[in-house]
Image (cartoon, rainbow, N blue to C red; front, top):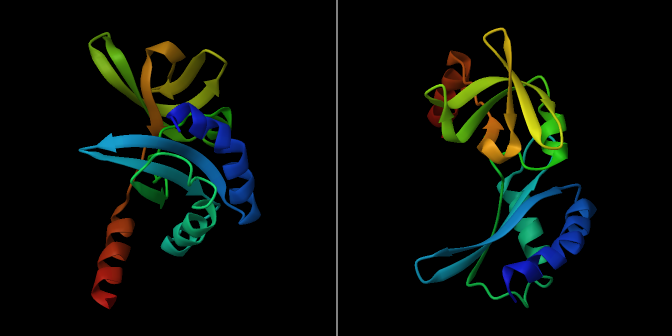
Length: 163
């Protein structure tokens, strides 16, 4: 089965994810070295745990067995996963995002600001008090801007000390 065949399985994979209160975020077949990885990204409110990945991995394995891959990975999309679907953009309205362009505009390829609007073919952000608008075809990646505070680092150090 080719990657186009994977796309035909997406509705069944979404339904299966919904049975566990997960959201199917993305799926892809990636060649790394001589191996083909089938990567499935799932999410849920509050984030995905390793146990969630294992549960979905066991459930989806039979569904995707006809696809040609060497390794099946089920994982979290991460905090800075690229925004792809209209639903992703809706969830991030008013939140900080990074936009990476294919070609520089005014000598700049990366812009950060609050996501204000996503239309069919444009994305607008508020950056430094101005509204900047970009055509979707100009955008290489639009992803949440992850902002960590000192408190985040303090919590991480406490967690490491507890282990």
